[in-house]
Image (cartoon, rainbow, N blue to C red):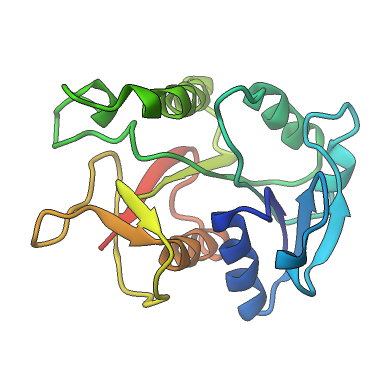
Length: 201
């Protein structure tokens, strides 16, 4: 498949490129400036907020946005995707919009949720809510567990929908590497069109 990764130089973006390449896919890294971390990945210099951004996205079977939410015009970025001929958009989301427990409030609405995290978490939730309200099925939003960071690629994890996933010790975590596995799995075999899902150990 031809996969475009926008925000390819970030922690998650790098792993997404590596995972897709390891499976034999043709990967295009799209970013505003090239970086050594991309290695031999095909690079296209572009900004998804530019008026002609759809040109860089067209020709791909799937586009993955691994971008910040705070202070970023995500509506324009989604419009750029929809102006292209790419059929699917997958978004690296946040964990704060997940329910703390089944039927309970979102993490971001629980007492003691860090105010400094809300600056990124609330815009991410708003993007997800807008996508849900549209009713389209050309997108997928993957939320990580509460803790995400460098680690192993085990390929062993659980998938969920709108609730935080926790292990037997009550920890909610996933590695960048296994997050990338779950995302590329979804690219290859779509199971969550027009919805959010989550991944954790």
